[in-house]
Image 1 (tube, rainbow, N blue to C red):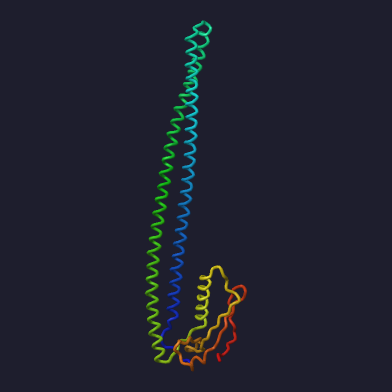
Image 2: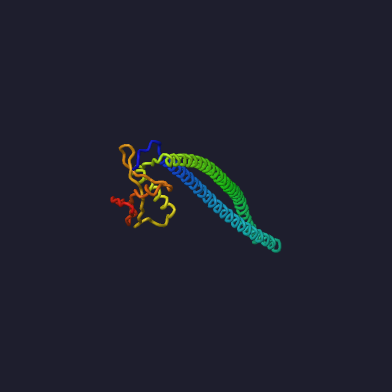
Length: 278
């Protein structure tokens, strides 16, 4: 029969290590989510700066086209003015002398207006060029900030991951050492560890969760998990006993079988009946 266990169990230590591992994983997931959010925000700012850059380039192109058209009109009017002056010089009649100077003045006024338009458009073109240069500088600054943020986030995440992994490795190493020492003690004394039903349930729950995480595209359903455990008590608290691999055949014959079945919804049901292993 199974006797009371006097030494502390290691399941609580394993549960603490697993909880610490889950906490570290959650922190890393949170850090990754923050990094993704920062990347999304930077990408949105870069897209906005790129749109402003395209708009500034389009406006600059329009100003250049308008300036070219105004220069063409100015050149055309100057040619007309030269032709009119040549006709006036070739035919110095009285009516022409009275009429053509008025036309020359009108053409000169148009030329002056075009010159003023060209000056105004040149100023606007210069302002657009400055805006385009500022947009390009802002875009480069956003790219540099994004690269710096990514590098810093990766550095922080890598350092945190290494720290967590190092601590977990140390804890697992200590847990293995304690488990080895306790297994040796149990083998020498013949005492076995009594595990509460809640601990068995928690162990199976974590086991199934890890299976589900490893198969994200599948769902556990219509499954059955069988456990072979011994029945014992620690003080007045009943529980189960997990036999070590080197347990004697006499102890193995006392094992009981528990079936854990899954329904179509993926829920876990426990078969209340225990059948003795034959």
